Length: 402
Image (cartoon, rainbow, N blue to C red; front, side, top):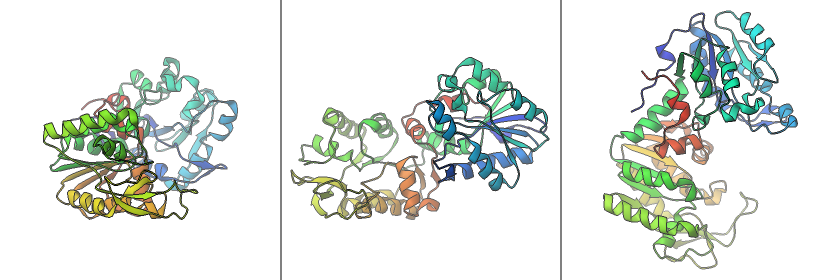
């Protein structure tokens, strides 16, 4: 079990608090198109304001490779929107080196409860290399460090790992705490029966997740594009469906592993097939449903069929813990979203603890309107996958233990 100190374990009155948030939001012409990550950061920021800290916020935004990137990847729009969401000024203090004279001056003028935001941490090249100079620069700004950016927890960068080597107090915020509680601890010590559902396109992305979850769960359900490599491993014809020839043996190994561990491994029993991939992705398309062992050579599987939907929904009914990562089909197309909708619905209707790994499954659940019915939707993509693999995340490990 992971027991990390959190913002509830410290007193920040009058202290300078550097908070690493995840403000990596999509921008279109300088306007934020999805502010979920800003809203998710508010509870931690509000708690630190209420406790009378001097709050210095930092985050990365996108990839910064060129000087032009610095024009479009500035956090200025985030400061404006955060000020509105918090109902108080978030003063933006930009510096091409992130930390510099104007930043120190702004911090010296802060009163308890004030908030400032630094420029995109990736404006410093060594951010992603965890360089010592930038780590020390960041540490020099604060008395206390708070990491609330789960989305980058699987990376060891200056602003989430390096800085902690030069501050005495490093704790996690509420968002990180929730991810640790659900994704980390619920998977390591689940209330049983524990059902894991894996989808998405590629088996290769989920190799270690499949293997780790087979050891932890009671039932593993496979859907999405990766299911066809499993079906091929069973000796079935998969037609033009997504297939990773190099992973067929691995899928056989996993089926054997499930059997030897006495775990249930559920694969599609029927599938929705089409002649071609929809173009545009949400365009009209003709479909037919075939049994999983009768996919025509000239067709491709695009979603789980009705019998499979019923089978998977039934498997979830008796569960006490469910983790879901990856859609069941091409959910961006309403005609091919039925499998993903069926699974989301089954999770919405169960009393189990339901945990949605980030990325596409989080997007699917939110777009389909089931977001508020889930116990926890992870804010991380790659980070949630690595947590499900059972890996230690550098950003989590760096925080002080209780």
